Length: 178
Length: 240
Length: 198
Image 1 (tube, rainbow over the protein chains, first blue to last red):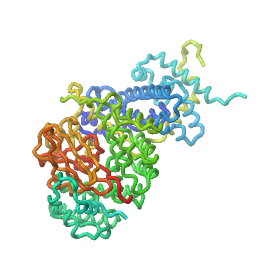
Image 2: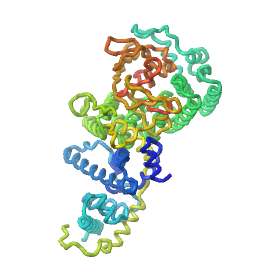
Image 3: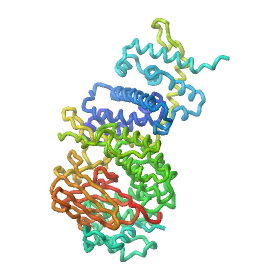
Image 4: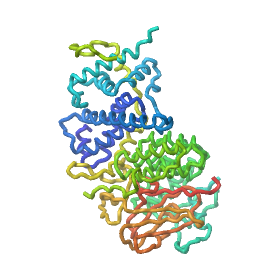
């Protein structure tokens, strides 16, 4: 069944159709979210928030849009929200080791390959907007025009973020000079 | 060794006299239960179910299911309970069979996750959790915090908060974190109530409330299960 | 490290193809989400969406409620709500407002169930796995003129499932008590009775 058919059925109240949509797009969204947030638990939460908002807004979705792009716009927003609220939690309880209350599940632990783990760790040290831009451009393979729609930032600002992100990654990954 | 579920309720019905006048003890128990009393030897045989509660096709199907469950070594009490529930709700026989079969499968999976020494009611709780979308890993994790027979409350709480929208991993971590503390049943019940109260207040409210509650328990402060802000009636969705 | 260069005319990808290649390789090597997580996410979304304010102009879909649906059942029936029946004869809820308030209290004799219904009912029965779900086994007793009902029964230690039947037809549950979600019949509540040799 095409996206359009599943969406039409979802609008008609078919919850199985919505389930099929989620199943179809979950892996791709997951891949972005885990690298963007660096944590599997946070990624799971962000995905749920994103799919919830998508569900509630499905009446407004325009068939002429690509569903994937529309969904990703919602997802990138949710990831940004997640990072903001994570920052707030950390700042508020900066002295309380147990404050976060959830077992962290860092992404870099999943990679057996040392190079992958190192790159994953380096990504997590980037500024959020640089990391987002780098992931959208090189991991997701988007064009800058698509990225402006997704992030609300202008093309030149995005190019700057990508360049700075790449430069920072390179310096993080270089072996320390003696 | 705990007796199958139906015998528990039999023991209950025949048990201590009511102290309150609220319940009329002369009200007849349903036929299925009385037959079960008559036909079963406590702790020795699975209870017999009353076929007259179902149409003949469904009754035959149920008998087959119960026999194969027994052959698998799964307790039939929970399956009989499910079938009786379906009959009471006047659900079509075909659906009763589907649900009972699915529940039997879930009981097998629950036994795998929770271990062979698990009492029947706890197994039933695990099967219900699996049917609700809780994954086996969560049951295994709960078993890691509680011995056989002591895991019912964590399982019930996990099943509930997942249905109210707490993401699976978050829910599992929250429940296991609390459950591994000694004497934490009340804390678990408080968690469930906090999530339930806050879930109706809007998206993300339940998850926020859970995080706050968890911080409180980890810090050794017993939190109240009141909603986050001052206690007021839950926000009701407008009637369309 | 601040970048003081003017905005590069050459796109960044020309600068470091090796790093770009590593990024795409990392992405491709990302492990898939755990089995069943997508389905669980869909269920959770549908459950949470039930509590969203209904905005008719938005085209928010209303879920057709049949038992095979992936939706979790936070199914709360106020007595005032009229129900419609779908093809299979299972009552489907209209939108729900949580009006039923219940408590469960251990007593010396067993467990006391009390509920508050917002509207007048002729009779209310407590049903559960302790009485074969029979609506005639445990009638509840009216408590005062404000819509309160109560029943007290002995219950063996362990987990029990229960629900309430109003006027012999309508099955309702306590929205705040632990729920046993719809697995084909409709939701019910669960309670764990302490004690016993476990």
